[in-house]
Length: 59
Image (cartoon, rainbow, N blue to C red; front, side, top):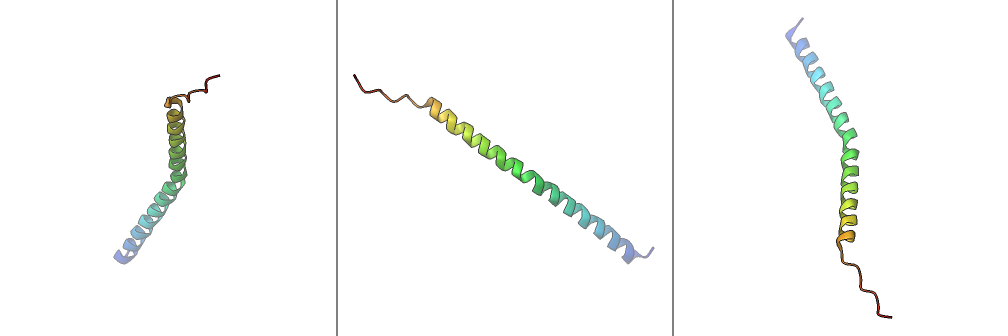
């Protein structure tokens, strides 16, 4: 096989691998966003639970 043909095949394989890696990374991104939202929601709930209860008005 000619050298140029082999180089072209290797380059195409490399490009396919990069595209596959990019697709996998793109699919994983929403999971991270969901984790962030859940995490911040838990922080908000924790802060509400840790806040002192408002004093009730005397009767």
